[in-house]
Amino acid sequence: MSPDDKVTPLRPKRPCPECGRPSARDSFPFCSARCKDIDLNRWLKGAYVISARDDEEDTDAGDPK
Image (cartoon, rainbow, N blue to C red; front, side, top):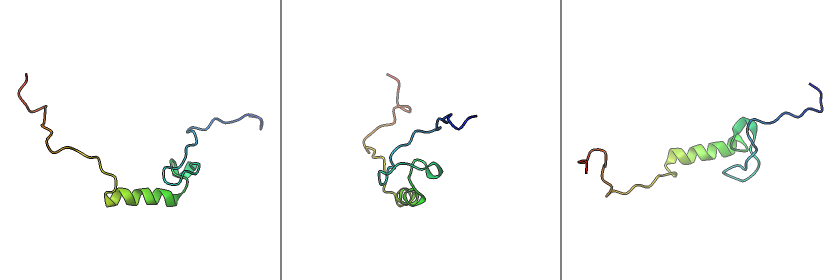
C-alpha cells in the first residue's frame, strides 16, 4: 500500500452530542471520555426519560374485535 492511498474510516465523524466538537475514535460518538462520562451520569440519574401515558390500554391482552 502506498502512502498516497487513503483509508476510508469505518464511521463518519459526527459532532459530539454533549459539546458539538468532532467525535473521537476511542470514545465514539463523543469527543472525549469527559463527555462520555457526563452522558452516563445523566442516564444513571434518570435525566433521560421516555414519557408514557397512564391511560394507555394493553391492546395485546384485550378481546379481538
